[in-house]
Length: 60
Image (cartoon, rainbow, N blue to C red; front, top):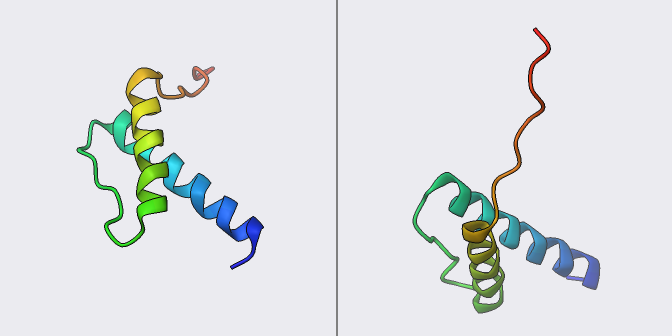
């Protein structure tokens, strides 16, 4: 795995943690990869203190 792939994987776990927090789901970090679990936890923590993005209002 090269550095770009590693950074993408880290971002994916961070984003998944945020999404889980925004959706009100319990933490579900990966058990097989401590580094990925750390990024998941960071994302989850940030998701708990940040509001989820909202879509633009409909013009209908």
